[in-house]
Amino acid sequence: MTMVIRNLRIAGPTPLPPEVVAALQRPMVPHRGAWFRSFVRDLLGRLRVLHQTDGEVFVLPGTGSAGWEVAIVNLLRPGDRVLLLVNGDFGERWCRVAERFGLDLVVREVPFGRAVRPEAVARWLDESPGTRAVFLVYNETSTGVTNPLREIAAVVRESGALLAVDGVSAVAGCPLEMDAWGVDLVFSGSQKAWMCPPGLLIVAVGPRAWPAVERAGFPRAFFDLREYRAAARTGDFPSTAPVSLLYALEAAVARIEAEGLERVWRRHEELAGWFRFAASELGFRCFAEAGFESPTVTALLPPAGIDPERLVATLEERYGIAINGGQGRLKGKIVRVGHMGWIERVDLESVCAALQREVGAFSGS
Ligand code: PLP
Image 1 (tube, helix red, strand yellow):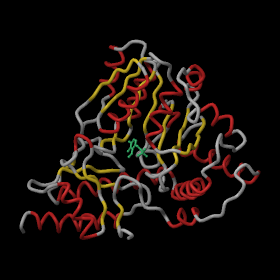
Image 2: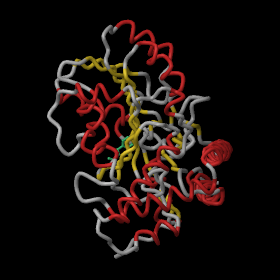
Image 3: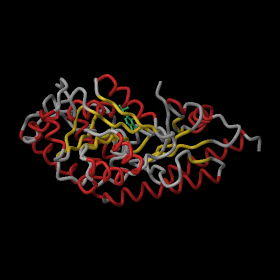
Image 4: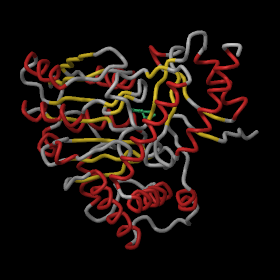
């Protein structure tokens, strides 16, 4: 039985634009042939532009979660001190991965729904001398909070530590100027603002990260960035290239280029602002603290008497609209609506119309 979702508004996978769907249907070619290698080199170059970096970008077969491990095994050695900043479920998950590696892990948490502040990062770095790397989730998909990456990066830069960023639900939707801000490594997932199916991890690596990659001391094989770098020089992959997903990514990149990167960021910001306002008119409260609300996903506290999990189920059953509930500690407390990638105002208007009907129905009006 196929499930009919008319409006896919979860925080990823996101809807695929028609040209991305068409790209997925292209025939296979020799993945080490001259044509495909030149296709890959061209794509990686364009991804650099979209990350605003002169550094290198690689595409790995894998999902966002692989990025946590990629950052650890490529930047660190056992016993290295890492400051891991947590303000949501994905930060917690990164912690659970990092705990397995025998690092000197310093975890600093701020209440979920609030943003990590640069002043606090400066203080924590002072308290933890010798920190080699700071790990931060740019856009906490679980809370709808976007951390002030630019300001945090400036503080981390000053300390001499490296900054590795989980940009899984941020890159291509939230502003990112990797080189200008001084981000050393950032990874993202194809199923989010990249408008592609799940399955690709896009990793951008800045120049300061490479000495750390050479020094890193964990066993690494499939995730060894040195192998991706060597292969990328000729448009190759260490393993068989994920051909169809790369075609899809190229089509999505072309779409972003056609709209213009800054216009894409602005569209996300404007739609998110419109949606927050509309939801607040319906009695929902934004879970993210004011000033740090995400351009790609909005977390909402429903009006009193409305059960978030039931609301999620009702939207899907009655309207074919898929949104998320809360996850981890926030399960049963919030709903989340994704608005990243291929999204226009009308997609959110239909969510609001359904919310309006259901909020009215629950409250008996
Ligand atoms: N990090 C963030 C911020 C995410 O939103 C997600 C997934 O939603 C992940 C990591 C994990 O990505 P994946 O589920 O693709 O492994």
